[in-house]
Length: 218
Image (cartoon, rainbow, N blue to C red):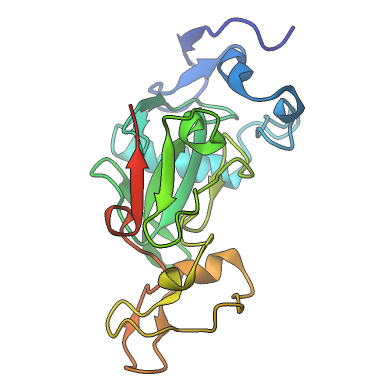
């Protein structure tokens, strides 16, 4: 069976030799059985080795900093980075905000962003003692719908506004839109917008986790 024992060895196939080769997928056994598929976990395309832009972007960005491990922005757990999909036991995401000091700065479409990561345990919401809840509406953040082992080109926290507090200007604190309104794309929440009230231009939807969430962690 594919999901059995987790074994690692240093890869001699990648250009830098700093990333590990994943020999099986046993770490994903914690997921429900219906999620053990390529729809929920990014799996390597056998016919596309070395040609995937997302993978090349992540590995080259980390290799430039000689960084073969990343930390979860929520629990700070250390995650190995692998040379093929799934690249990490969680998921990467880009944000204009550096959620921890180990998130490397990258350039994407001409924008200066940070390559952040969330671990599988914090994403799937399975552990009762790993909860991230909104301070204002008490809604628990749920990242179980995100594909693991790959990267999202937007801030995954900003893209899921749970209440009106997440839709306010960072300056004047007035609402940027009505509570029932939503932007066209998830990535729009990670871009600079102009407040219609005070004309402040900022990443208004990208909020500090410590200010807008309460955490329950071991």
